[in-house]
Each structure stands twice: as C-alpha cells, then as structure tokens.
Image (cartoon, rainbow, N blue to C red; front, side, top):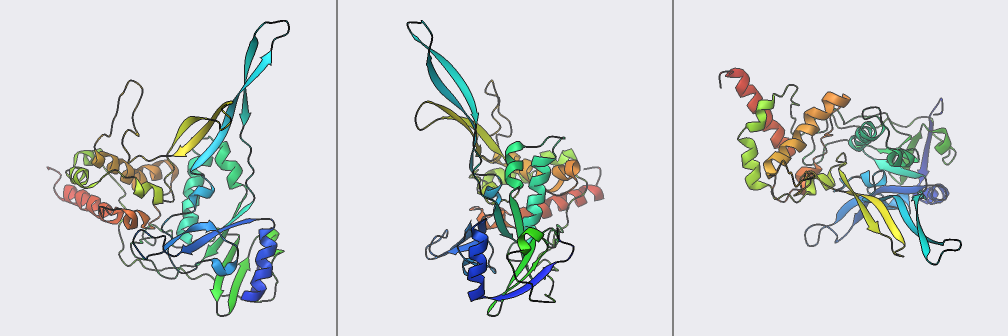
Length: 357
C-alpha cells in the first residue's frame, strides 16, 4: 500500500480512457443492471458481471446476487485424469497409463466493485478457505491473490438489510474507493499499483459515507443452548420451506460444494470439478451406506441459520451472516433470516424468564 492515498476527480469522458487502461490488465467486475432479466415480467436484474466502462456500473441499486463466484466459481476444474494409450515395447497389445494434470488457472487479475457488507463477506470466505483449522485451500488462494477491491459507498440500508446490527456497514479494507459524482467520478486510491492509472489532481475527497442505522435492527444471539434444536419453530419452517436452495445461492458467504468427476469433452479422460451445492437441498447430507440426516427442511434451515449467527463465530470469531438480506429477497416462501433471528431471541428470552420450562 502507498503511504499516502492518491485522490482524483475525473469526468465521464476522462473515465473512458482510464477504464481502457485498467481493462488492459484487469478484468473488472461490478454491479450491472440487465433490463427484462428480473424474476418478474418487466423487471430488471442487478447482478455482478464484467463491465466495459464506468458508465455501465450500477452504483445505487442492490444486487440480487453477490460476487462470490469470482473467488468460488460455480464450476471449478481442479485437475483431470488423462487416459493415455502407450504401445508397450514388443507387446502385442497396448498398455494404458493414467496421468493426473492440474487444471490451468488462466484467470486474469480482477477488480471487484463492492459495498461494505460484501467486503466483509470476503473476509468470511477468507477465514473459511485460508484459515480453517490451519489449512489453506489452494484453489481459492490462487484466485484470491489476483483480486483487488473497489469500495462503493452505501449511505442507507436497502430493503431487508440489517448490516448495522452485524457491524458490516463500515470497512476500510479496500484498495480504492470510488464515488459517482455530478458529471463524473471521485476516487481515493490506497493501492500504489492501482494509483498509477489515476491522476492525482484532487487534494481532498470526502470519505466514504456508510449506513448508520438499520431500518429494522436485530439483536445477534450470544448464547444458544442446544435445547433450541427441538423447538417448535423448526417444525413450522418444515411446513413452509420447499428446499429450493435460493437462499444459499444468493448468500455471499455460503460456500458448500460437491466434488464430481466428469467425462472430458474429448472422452479421453475425466475432469474433477467442484460445483456449488447447498445444505438446504435434498440429500446434501447423504452419507455412505445411505445414511441421511437433517432430512426435514426445518432441520436444514436450523443448521444454516445457527451456523450463520453462532457456530461460525465460535470457531472464527466473526459472524458468517453479513446482514445483506439477499436470502430474504430471494425466498419464494417469504422465509426471513431477520425474522428467524428475532424468533430465536424470543425463545432465549422466554427460557431465561422461565428456566423450569
């Protein structure tokens, strides 16, 4: 990092040249609005996509999906088994040899434009893949090393957000902060490598503005007894949840995957890939011998919720949930993480008041 930040103001026209210079060396991923691609007729989808100019970036609307696929691709090749036929010297028939080849990483260095909560989500992913039990995930690490983060400010929470409650509303963990201003952009760059792409023509840029209060604050449970596993709340969710997995797909910190061996296109071997999965879908927890657990949808939801707000924190020291509310936005049965946390608090308070129950 540079000792002193570089600050700059530039017009939309000047931004075209700056963006072109950046894109020669970096893939740039940012919120992009796609008209007509939303869940309902005539609505737009705001998602993380590769953009071709600063003008394409949607600075003011919430994305329905996160940018986690940059670091944890939906389908990620790990290595392949090649089936090579080699004629044995003096033998009448061919012998067969198998060679494992590591998958090439051809990913370009990447810049991602993120709000504070999503930068905190990457911290969660880092804790999970880079420092989980002393192990480092090689495939995540080599992608993570290529990523730099541009902060987009978020002055007020969107619908269903509760980031202030989870203290993910603010961050200083960014390489550059960019703001869309009248007639152009303002930027503060802390990363020396990136600073070379921007003019240093401003003495002062107003610091990022962050949301200061949730529209619906929630208390994070601190002590949860295992007796809560048998509460009636989970039976209610079993009746409502349809196990579609949309909550986990939209969540920026869900990282479950399966590992599959898939026949190569040339049929000369197999490729081992890890592919997104979900703790909410049927048979995710199926074990050898056909043993399955968390069969009921409510049990799966219990596992997911408690992992987000309690279990992960006990191990890593930070909450897995960042309060972005995307799971609330996506659920077709209107199951709310926010409401679920509220209900857990009510159960804890009721049991504290009546320990004999």
